[in-house]
Amino acid sequence: MAHVAVTGGCGFLGSWVIRKLLADAHTVTVLDLERTTKRWEMVLTPAQIERIAFRPIHIDQPDEVLEAFKALAPDAIIHLAGLQVPTCRANPLAGARVNVIGTLAVFEAAGALPNRPAIAYASSAAVFGSDADYDNQSVTDQTQPKPGTHYGAYKLCNEHCARAYFLDRKIMSVGLRPLTVYGPGRDVGMTSFPTRAIAAALLGKHFDIPFSGPTAYTFSEECADIFVAAALHPVPNAPSFTVSGDILDTKAFIAELEKIVPGAAKLITCSGGNLPIASNLNDDELRKVYPSVRRIGIADGIRRTVESFKALAAKGKLEV
Image (cartoon, rainbow, N blue to C red; front, side):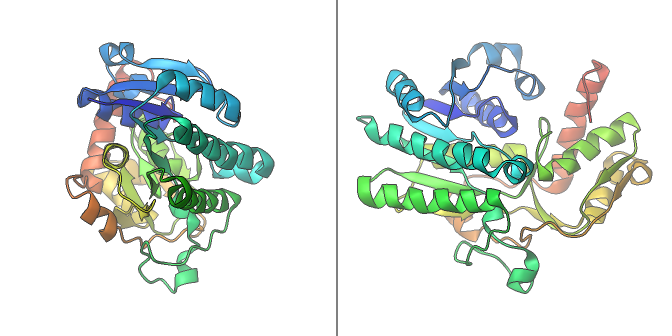
């Protein structure tokens, strides 16, 4: 079994990654600004939370990152720490420090360890432009990136840097490019609105999703499984893999939610146009490399989210 370090492990996706690692009997150390358990409590049992080691860290401080990884000596690293699209738009300098300098700090630390642990890191489909930029054609790993946000530009920079680290120092890494990851714990970022809409529907509240165009939906458990597979089974040449899922526009998503939560269609609306990120994503290359990771369809993903949210609502802990 492996010892896996997870940066940003107190966040949404980190919580699901931890769930997968613990289920497979791995040892987990989380590195984050502070130990917050709100999202863990949505997807982990108290016994599982007790098994998580924690070390506070400022990801944009390279000396601090190096010291932490030398002390931990992990077998693999899953790097999720980062700032989301709205924060990067509001404060590009802070976004660059955390998303770029922070990622470089993780690679530098990995390269300083004797075992040079592999890194699975969060890139993003935001490295691509809008569907219109590609004439609404399928977008693959070979498609030219055209980021339209600071966030997407930072992620693309990290992909190029990861490639340079492999060529120069043979540090193994895999970048993963999800788009709209949904499920319990998703409460921050531009693509968090569908998850929050599920909570609103269960609470009987009106809620507007501020985009109406299509996007690629990936359930949190599936996305976490991909990250764990990539960290523990890296491949050469520092590839970046696009992560797809069910591609629906927002009205179709609301229709799927209505099937599971009757009355949701009267509460949940959508406005605005398309997201500035291509939705017609093709992840055939990812599936060839990691064929054991099963897809979780939109109906099953919404159902699982609803079940989890109902349990939270019964305890008075469900928020929009």
